[in-house]
Image (cartoon, rainbow over all chains, first blue to last red; front, side, top):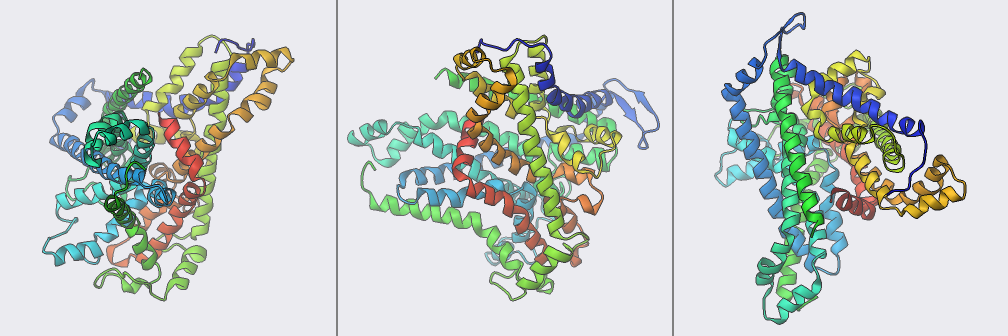
Amino acid sequence: MTVTFPHKTLPWLLIAPQLLVTLIFFLWPAGQAIEQAFYQEDAFGLSREFVALENFIELLQDPYYYNSIGVTLVFSMAVAVSGLSIALVLATMADRIIRGQMVYQTLLIWPYAVAPALAGVLWWILFDPAQGPIALWLEYMGIEWDHFVNGGDAMILVVIAATWKQISYNFLFFLAGLQAIPRSLIEAAAIDGAGPVRRFWDIVFPLLSPTAFFLLVMNIVYAFFETFGVIDATTAGGPGQSTKILVYKVYEDGFVGLDLGGSAAQSVILMMIVGLMTVVQFRFIERKVQY
Amino acid sequence: MIENRPWLTFISHSVLILGIIAVALPIWVAIVASTHPAEAFGQGSVPLWFGNYATETWQTVLFSAAGNGVDVPVWQMMFNSLVMALGIAFGKIVISLISAYAIVFFRFPFRSLCFWLIFMTLMLPVEVRILPTYEVVAKLNLLNSYTGLALPLIASATATFLFRQAFMAMPGELVEAARMDGAGPIRFFFDILLPLTRTNIAALFVILFIYGWNQYLWPLLITTDDAYYTLVMSIKRMVSVADGAIEWNSIMATTILAMLPPVAVVIGMQKIFVKGLVDSEK
């Protein structure tokens, strides 16, 4: 686009609202988080002293922080892998179907609109050790289930709730990806005698890999930052530390523990992680443009 | 259809139906639970078939008080959620539209700096900078207000990006023609640009409405007054009352009501939503 309007003040008026909101609610707080990360403040906010990198050093020596990193990695990988594989199976099946595809799509995509916190509460009651139908069924099958005591059970619960909500998103992208594969390719393979399974692994799957990679990044971002509601409405990070993902720890240390410096240092580290993911995402988009 | 394999078609349908059942299971249990009295819970399994207490539960939840320590009725929280969701959706669309317009169709000093400042917000989700943002909003006296609920979430790099992309794809001849006919920048914006981006705006609106409605952490932090509770966050207040006293029937009814509007929007505007989602993220 080279043709523009010659005007001096109008563009500033147009961009001012966005800039103001960005400055006041994004950059100012971000700046404060960075500043606070280098200070130690008492719980009442009365006095503070400059401590340089001490908050970060403390964090990096804190076994709970490493535990939280581990929990986050396990959680996000579990959400991404199970969400992607279930969605891929469903999308492949839906792609085969000619009549009724829209109906299936409608019935599969609505969880996208459900808030993570609500998804958490719904699965929370299904797995409730005392009265949840699934927990009682598991007990009947001889499997002990108690997410109040067992950290592994709690992790499985939040993974299921978080994945349930994300399947529709993955499904839509996989379906779009599948429909973008030229029919002639598949037909040619079929004429050469390749069955459906062979065709899937040799043609469809490789052609789908850009979509899969994109979704992997998006799912990890989702699990890192958007699942706060799932955790907070159900396990609240427990039992013990077993479901305390990084985002939840920032919140808890800051608002409940009132460790402002430590929370700010965690914020700064998280901001760097988001930055890194954004770069990865954009690299990917750039690469895809060249296809 | 490449070949006729009835067995494979049968399997496809079965897998999909199984998937739909698994996806719908929590909702089934929620709807059934809302038709039983509070005493039905905590003794044996959560009921799996309808009871006859539906009218009572829904009447109390909708019109008197949501229960479990939340004193306002659901319709009021629904109104709050609606104000917040619409505020965020409209706010984001308007300020992103005009700022993308400024960036694409004008040349002014610090243009790319402005763009990068906006772009940076992509890296700063609320969850990451909770505490300082809360402090800023408290300093501005916006706790417990609709402005405080919506305004801080309005800046949007994604929407600006999307509109920038759409604007850049427009042929330069359009601007030339408009200028030759004597249309100024404001006339051009309303008469040419806006009608041409109508579909983008509609698709974005669906996605942003859902985003706004489903906000959880932010309203949880800045509302302490029941009158400003939003529906989604009220669930947290409701499940945190003492364990034995939880009225699961009213919680489930509230949950259903909290997911109804965004689900209705997704299903009702499915075509435009799917297109918007798949296009905007690519």
